[in-house]
Picture 1 (cartoon, rainbow, N blue to C red):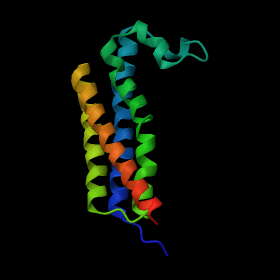
Picture 2: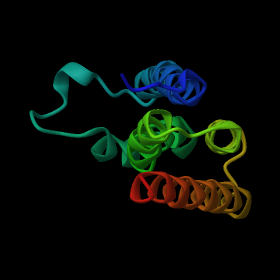
Picture 3: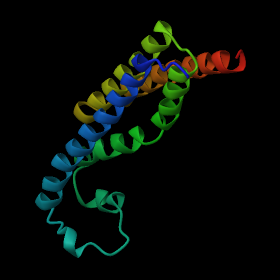
Length: 146
């Protein structure tokens, strides 16, 4: 039987939960903005996407929609890495890396949702990417050395 390090799965569960918080935040911010801009979602043409409506409403209304998309992109690498590390014998260092990634992604979301200046957002993204690279290297070391 394979021993699973559940401490490495907790950050993945936390990031998934945070992604759902961002989904709600997006709706809470966007739907009133659509109403204020006179956009009736029932009259939007079939096949239209949220980005099609961005020209018709304030930019800030869409910051969380953009962040939600970001949480569906790079973290798709994080989730399997967390599972690989949990199954391959990852330890404390790997849990620290995973939690660091989550903290940076939550920070990125908060920054994008509240302030949204690109230099800070890019720095948070860059740091999170470096942590993800470290997790990938650790996963390779643990699995190729088996």
